[in-house]
Length: 430
Image 1 (tube, helix red, strand yellow):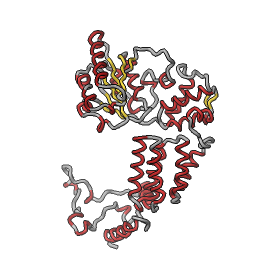
Image 2 (cartoon, rainbow, N blue to C red):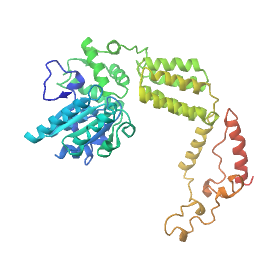
Image 3 (cartoon, rainbow, N blue to C red):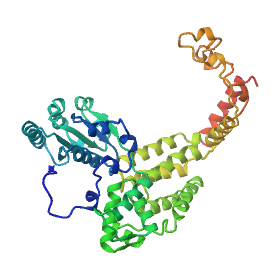
Image 4 (spheres, rainbow, N blue to C red):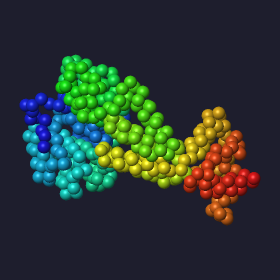
């Protein structure tokens, strides 16, 4: 358990020294920091409040808890659910009650990794939350709906934090280089080294500052080579000049499209070893599953989404196995770009102004007065007809007869193609 009143004799890490002191100094999470948001109200009010901060590592959960404490002059007590037990929780709550009774000073009780507490440990927090003896802030990287008991969750606000953008991480690093609390200009950061640190961070501000601090200890001139040594990661000539990042991801996609699983795995390995954000890779695989495989193998998208969720859940290095699983599936699946061509053609017509009115018999008829407008009149319920099909107009007049989805005869899309041809002919009386 950490109490901010206790001062450390040893130098604090750069990530701790650069921790924002006010909400205005916080970089990122603008959706949580605007006027009238719960965090703003908590800072501007003296009333206790209970919050859960849910988000990936390094997104500022501890920072926000610390800022709330610092700005409101509340006592800050941190408990790690990894190592603390019920005894620690009860001791912290009792100390907060004494402080509140003797001096009127409130306590921010911050529980990191709160999802690691079992039910009994979470139950121990309930009296403090219900009686508002503390301002409780729980931080978690897992969905609280599944990892936090209902009584505790229902008494708290749930705020979702987002991964930092590249621009956010870049701003964090540049501030740390120049700020007196940071490197105070004692080290220079080459532009390509800054880009490399941003990529290695993967949206994690704390990680970016840890790597920067390690690099600055090695040299006052931080280059890509220095960053590589500090982070113990080889850049493998990736993105040195700013184009390799795009070249490698392009080759990765084209290798999967060309069904060369070996080449695709090579590029996957290059990106992983270079410190590419695994979530970026996973997003590209998910897109590929619909863009280049589509209905030729509908299970490919399921595999890609599952891999993306697994990477989000467990991270690297184990997450590379999930990515490899999805990459091999995508590479060896039959290919079809019919889905992306279909939505592209439909969007193209909409952008040309081919929109038109929704046919009256398809309009919503469930609200009062709809019947008087003729909404729903003449609609034929397909389930009342043989094979669940009935001939009626579904498209606006402006695009009637337009053909968007043209399936291939590849893989599982072949039977879809035959079935769609028959359905289309029936619906259009061809």
